Length: 258
Length: 284
Image 1: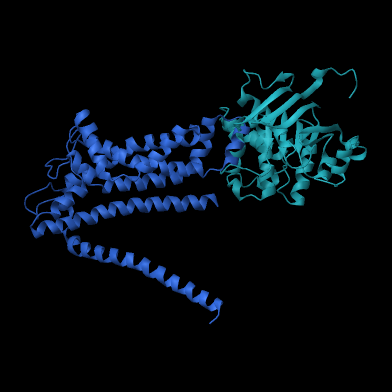
Image 2: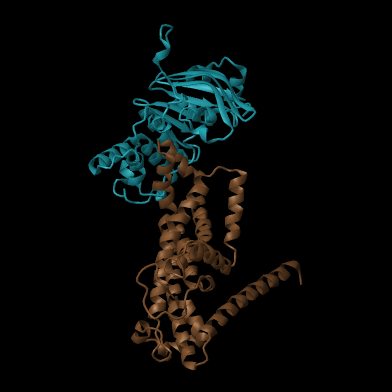
């Protein structure tokens, strides 16, 4: 990034973030500016705070009673933790894909349409159009187009996860958070998801938590390495994987711990 | 004999013990059913269903009893189902974990085990006397609603609990509010279990006698109830009344009425089982 870039050019910005679960501090003074239409990988050993960090951006941590935080999360220049933030609105623009595929116990069609229907969109032709578009975007259309009324639970794990991605895309977010989206999938499904992430980058800003170093190296533009609540290093993925500045980053990436 | 053989024998012994226990229950029920059907089935005809009660056993019918049971069934369903489900949704989805919530929870579980006649006494005091409803259908169905509310609440909460957290989380992540999530996702997913619980609870209400006797339901009602404020009788009370009479004709009447009440309850339980099986198939 060039020196002259102003702060507002970042799509997302985490500023001086401290997160506590009760007394326990799980993130320490994390700063991370993220440009639009990029893929940012968050890596680090289990319990390092990367998932907690990811869930800050759609306020999913709010459901944890003992959670509290200091610092700011800016999306499009606005702090999403302001009092007047409408959390439901926020989550329409910041979608999330979870570790384990979690389709609703409904038909494939109804899964995709769910996010639209809760917004009061009920026009059949419009729903049809968005459902098809979203499933196509998620590279699932050819596999399910004849069975849209079938239960989503009957799909394979990899298909379910692409369905969940399609469901997220249907509400047209600008940011997509992915929490180890391929960790429960076989290699072929994983490859499909990775390919998909590359395509989605054109339109969305993506943050992805992953335990898979190769995956982070393959799909991301930037990588942040977390360790014990610190953002140890945050840089171009190329840089992190070939020439890390910090010794701990190097040890983790080369598999010496974690 | 080594250990393995001994274990196998124990295994077999326990299996046969279990089978014996099961068949013992079924056998007793079978004997009972056979006796009842033998006595009563020939008495069931159109007149029996449409006649008013009478002093002469051959002329007596169960019109007032079965219409009363239908009234009670319907009214109790109207009061107890929305209240029970709403209370369960509050307790399960909205209620914060606190000492008060715990107290409430313990009380509801305990209430499910309170003898039904206690509910009758409560109904007598509150609905019949305090609210001045008398021995009416309304007082009866209020009392039975109280009786089955804990059952509905407990069953509904279990059903809601069975909807996994990951499903709810996915809904929130799409921008759904809590109520949207409950209405569009949690309730449809748990509906079949809720319906099963509700039907079983209502089947229990239909078979209750003691609380209704306490609130003053009559054994002899010479008219069909037209409004919820009318006095009434129900099938179990009619049966109870006939059995306690000396004439043999009334014993036969009671047997016939038992067959009809049993059929009604069996059909309801059958529907509950059917819904459950169908829901299971759907989710797999």
